[in-house]
Image 1 (tube, rainbow, N blue to C red):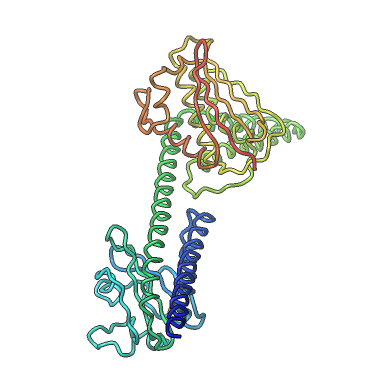
Image 2: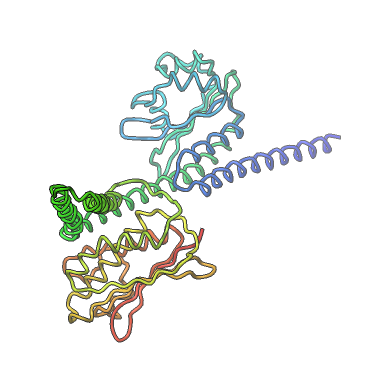
Amino acid sequence: MNESTHEESTASELQDRVTELIEQQTAISEVLRAIANSPHDLQPIFDAILDSSTRLCRADVVTLRLSEESGLRLVAMRGDPLLVSHLWSSFPALAEKGSLQSRIATSRLPAHIPDLAALEIDHRDGSWITAVNAGYRATLIVPLLKDNKIVGTITLGRKQVQPFTDKQISLFRDFAAQATIALESTRLERQYREAQMALAHANRVATMGQLTASIAHEIKQPITAARTYAAAALRFFDKSPPDVAKVREALTCIVDQTGRASDIVDRIGSLIKKAPPRKEAVDLNAAILEVAALTRSEAIKTGVTVGTQLADKLPRIQYDRVQLQQVMLNLILNAIQSMRDVEVGNRELHISTVSIEPEGVRVEVRDTGHGLRPESLPRLFEPFYTTKPDGMGMGLTISRSIIEAHGGRLWAIPCEPRGALFQLTIPAD
């Protein structure tokens, strides 16, 4: 009889352990799913961690604080709506150094307080008073550590004096360790993307600086034309009788020319503006033609003939327009600059688009410059590698990272007898 009872107890304990492990793995899976669905947005990952924490330890409320120089910043809270509402409005957004939360985090060990109301006076602070007044009793505070560095804390709370068991604490420590890795990976990826965006913006601004003279010329042309038409309109108006038809025609030309100048300024503004990436349906051919227009004066000044062969009815693509135009701007300017030392009359730049099934679209930028040396080809897209005496070596690196971030490819091919061909693919929507 005793043997049978022992076997049943062992089986029950084993079943409980299996259930706990399944719950823990389910919780981690939900966090990983949140990362997969939103790899660059921390808020859904915060929510997934806290929702899983609530279920895993049967908590009424869970809060997440992340470490910063001045203390622990409250970034997310989940659980009982009334308790969450009260705590959000009452809890300090920043648990400064020396506070209960901060002291516990510094210890790098979980702190289990079975009843906050019974906490010794020496350990009480403002957040303790707020929690108790809100009906917050049993609590478990677990520091989030990465390489023994404090990343933040997760705090579990119950409205009743119902201490967390040793099993729950052990289970949650394991979950918190894995959640920390996921959180830090996402945070580092986000920092990398933000740095990449800043670098891409700096590259666009630097490129616009190189094009200052050409852009000034592009803007000056329609302004000069508008002034000429305005003078003509005045002459037609001064006639006796006034030539109203000619005045109307001149005014229409003024409107067209000022619109052209405005379009140029808008295109420059969108390229220089620092804004988060935004995928949208892009007319690829129109986007390329806008960039070609911005570089037209530079091509004329260098003696480069620009030709385009843009395919009709290209597949629909979802892209960040500014980033796509930045890539084209880099490729076109590189091509123009590569032909400066080529004899006049043989400086040709050709831009084409073609639909490729089932991938999407391929864009080609071909020049008749001196071409690519075999030894430079493997390093062409490396950061800070450049064959130009005044180059920074970042344009092609940034261009490839932009294309790859959108699921495409960018590569270069030497041409015979001379020149280079840069090709990029963009997946269809």
